[in-house]
Length: 483
Ligand code: ADP
Ligand code: MG
Image 1 (cartoon, rainbow, N blue to C red):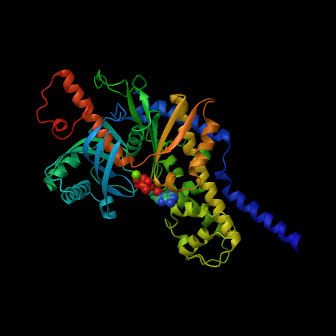
Image 2 (image 1 turned 90 degrees about the vertical axis):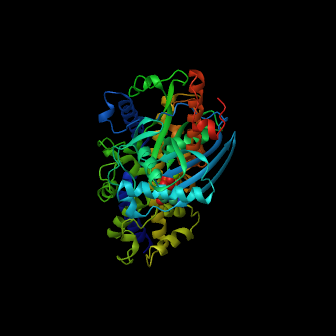
Image 3 (image 1 turned 120 degrees about the vertical axis):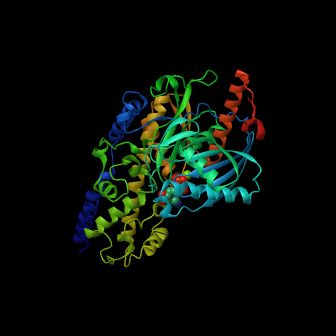
């Protein structure tokens, strides 16, 4: 009865479609996102509205991009995601040498006290310094700290809130540089001075701008999602009078913290039942709404929730055991999405391997097709939403040629993310504006060190112009910086 069977199939696909259609959004929906996002950004930049704005648009105190003259030996720290790393970065013009070591941050520390966290970090730095025989070196440190911070100086940043997997007690509202410097004093004998704290988006931008003059936007697609860009100082109403200095260009990198876009409900028109469920079971309900629709920490879980729903509706894995890992929260990793979407033929090798890992039994080729389809819908929405964000920034900056520095495992490893983003940005930017997405290498290490180097260069310049005595300054002791 071939005709009846195809009628049944059709209904099945129609049914599946009804459970996933929320991920398919029109061009006008993304244009609406852009208009909302731009308004929120403007609110975040204005002094009188920043307090109530979801997107904080933090001025970073990074006022200048690298110019290639940066030299010296730096430590860098990368904290704020999946891995914690300590890096030794040696800069010599465009030659950059990096040695690094990854350390584990146990869950009990991620959810413990601030003191425990910073003591742990200081211990890791202490070990690293000994292993690299740097005990007697004066080391300027660039700290990549990828959580929303209100900066009061290049090396003074108060944590606004924890995001991603972290929730350490007693840190919100405190200056994280001071907490780290105190921990270093308590726990080590090394001569480390924190000279700059940046987030990973800023590090990514700094790192790519080192070799590309057109680069003025940085984007992270990793555990979280965030962007930064170079803004004219006159547009930054939150920039306090007196913080400006003559020798700086009238510009500053803005850390948008756009992951929080939608926290006021303005994206609810495009959220699906799966987004709501993911949010309910997250450690920060109702927060980081845009981030939860895009980033690596959540994408796999969204896919899993759809698959579970389809399976409960008997549209998928009809003979699978309901106790298998697929039905457990957090078990469907975002890397699976990349692997599944890398299947290009009807053998579904990767998809089958993932389903085996999840202990799904008795699945069919038909099931594999549906699983891959769900992955493509969820990842395309993420890529398009990130693209809408970038298009908003590209239009705002309105430059002929713009390079966007991108970092993060989701961008790096997902087989279609780059192409999907380019496609959508083209559709959304003003005619005539050209752009390029470029993978930034080691933004959190090289970028943090470059920020420290630029800061020392400007510090030196200031001292030269004001005729100050250099005295014990680190900049003159350990590194030569061309002013
Ligand atoms: P971080 O943002 O923490 O510095 P990464 O850039 O490595 O670190 O991003 C980690 C995130 O990337 C995790 O949420 C993980 O799920 C996701 N991820 C890791 N591997 C892949 C992959 N192959 N494809 C897509 N996402 C991945
Ligand atoms: Mg990172």
